[in-house]
Image (cartoon, rainbow, N blue to C red; front, top):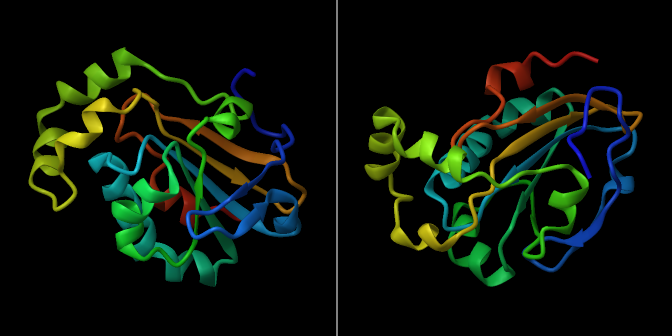
Length: 177
């Protein structure tokens, strides 16, 4: 499937979070949703962003925005890495990338290269507590963020161009519907 655009219907999915709870997007109808796709649970860029979402979660909650994150990892990997952050929102496992395919999430070695040649991004991640070499084996999945309105329509589809490229937090907080 190709990339999604504003006003497209958000593709439905049913999956499990890393704790074993069944999550169905239809259960979130009538809610505003931030749906964020990440590479893998070992990815330091992903864990930095997850940490940002956790810190801003009280503001998202106040604004009525439900947060759902998806990792192309197993339950065990998420429990070992990203799950250690104790996110107050849903973290879905999708190691086969079925949900990724439905949302048009891409892989890009060029995107990986663009990340690696950015010295500020690399220094930030290297000196974070999330840096590890295990993420090297992960596929070069680019991140994506979707704001989904109460009618299950895409309000914003943001496709990242490198491993650390997500929709700015301020844009999410300014989302008015």
